[in-house]
Image (tube, rainbow, N blue to C red; front, side, top):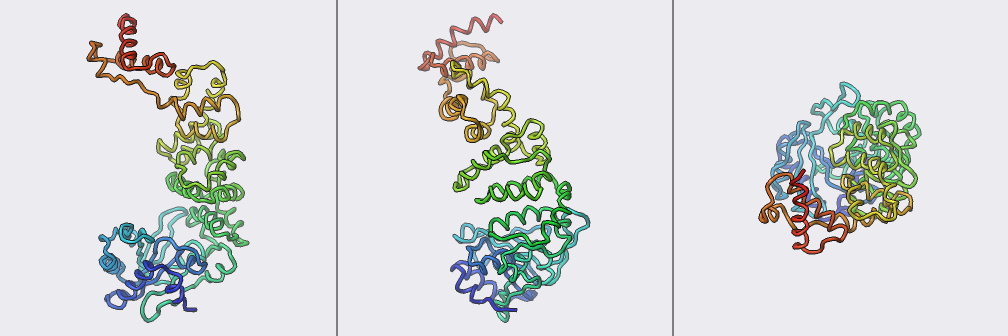
Length: 422
């Protein structure tokens, strides 16, 4: 195997080199540690001369003792341990380039059923690499003193990096873990690689196994796609290979939504609810509800998806020329803000758009100055009447009929007899 020690010294930042040197020293000093390797994406990125992400390490032997010692030497807190023989060292307050170091026990994995979580057992570095998703992510570089820089590449990942192709390690890869279909899309677009010639066939044969994934896992994978700068290309590719339809039959991305997403790809400030609302813009009520159900979506995410269809039921009313601000607020008050923003960006250029913009930028911020305590102080009795009077004042303020707090109090007093008579 080639030696890539030059990558460790010339292509790595000072902070990465510091971690690598700690790993070399610990592997030489700590009993029970037979090998330490950087693995996965960091190896691929060093070869490609891309800025690497967080550090992933695989330890042959006592990974727990190793991770505790590495945490101590870097000044981090004790590692977090998982049920899968993994340890996370959080370094965001210590390093500027590295937010965490993940240490795994070199292990083999087996799957009792498609989409099931794996059964793990302690094993060798070769077995640890064979359990990974794609050949380009299945390489390791030794950080042990005697083998410093030696590339471990049992699946010819180096060759696939040179050929710029994404290739699975075996034909059952997508059956074992259908989330790898999402990852294949992300890596191919992110790296500018092509899928291996056999990949489309394997994806086609196994894509039905997406149904075996929990809603949470599917939603997480979809949200990871939306979080990428190249999300538009990833969504297009997902649609081409049938991944979107496999998530939910009605899930599709309209041309206008893709255009809006493309324009926003340069911005890192777009919030997830806004991305979900834009991505699902154009789905009807049944389709939106099916997507939310498939995602097992929490309220915030679910409302961003179903809100589009909810808004579509009422938005035409906003085209009326003499609509008062209070009427606009009443129409839109139950619609998620993300869905309103999505309509502004992706909806037709009709008069309603101006009303939507006015609501987002002005109307929704107009509130009465008076509170329930103010009304109690002037003798209005405790109960639902308080909220009803404040709502009357809110509408009046929206329509410019009151301008001061005293105006609001006088209006509430004048309307009190009518409420008491009910």
